[in-house]
Length: 66
Image (cartoon, rainbow, N blue to C red; front, side, top):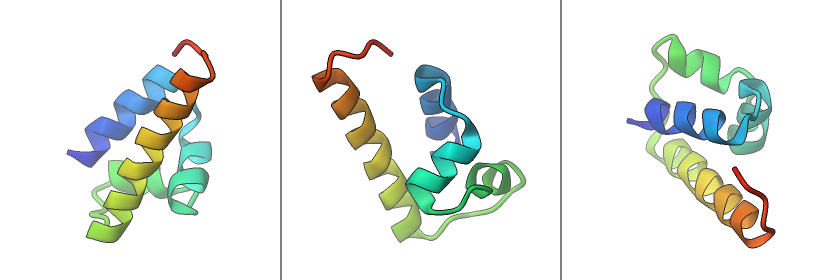
């Protein structure tokens, strides 16, 4: 489930949910809306998953511990 992946990502990175929404979906309320039952389009979900993978890969490459 996408929301579970996002919640785990937020815990691991200590990123505020509004910042995540802005960066991953260009919508600062994205996470709040998901928490309230919003179902994202497939393209949006894929873009968000890609963002999380790229962010974590970048953190690993730069040596930042999560």
